[in-house]
Image (spheres, rainbow, N blue to C red):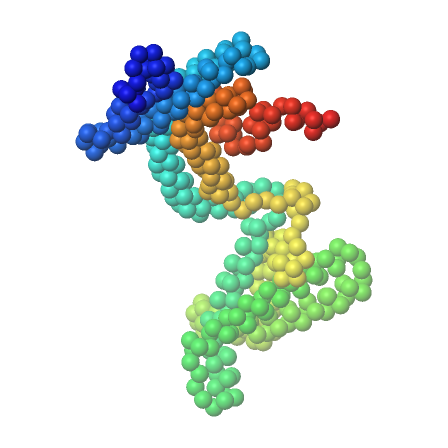
Length: 402
């Protein structure tokens, strides 16, 4: 077009359409048509958007300059026009710097993510490995701090198990003979000992329960309750002495014969007397040592009435263990969201700044107002269009307020 004109017309057309003088060369260079693939790719990534923005700004500059004569506030218009060119220059350099910032943020985020994964696995291994230790620690704190007598409860149960085991072996021959005479068939000793052990265990636990109830009755000083529970305790004493401790004493008769040259005759009265004394001694010592505290606790557990301790405030719950994994995952999830937002901002803001600077030229041509504030620092600055419309048409906003 310039070649067809001559003289003054050529100069005028060159001024009016000056972008045509260089835009073809600029575009070819930015597209990298004659370059290697990776060179062309880099040019398109780092230069093509900038070249298009500069060409658009040059084309918009032409009507802006021509319309200066008709503008009402020419001084402000010209100053603002130079400022939006300055904003475009800032946006171009911010684009290149923003790419470097994005790469830095991306590498930092990847390294932090790898560190996060390693630390998460390490914390998981620690939590899984130290759960038994934490349980033992909490158990130790619960045992040695003033509160529920867990040691007494454990000792009571262990003693009942030991006593049931001893009497299971002592009474097994008698029970086998009795059942064989009743049924007329042989019974396996191993199969017999399991139900016999459970029966004796519940019998011994019931004996301690009766003794605990009788102690409470004595503490309450209620004569009627004392007599009733006392009779039950005598029945329990009779059953255990006759069926359990008597057999235990009978098993010691060979030992007495060995030391009396076979002339020792204990008799039924002596056997029952020794069995009664053994029952009183065993029950008395175990009751004073641990059963007096463990039995009420065991009965409270069976009844489901709840456990109380003076050192624990009402409604206060003592945690069994503290696993850091859940809290750690929550913090890491929040960090991942914040880091993802930072990476996305670093990726989107550089090209958006170029687009914002280009849009400023177009809006400046029609409204004399650039609607974007360059440089952009957050993605929120370009997400809402309502603020831009209010900025472009301030008079309409004032009318709505009125």
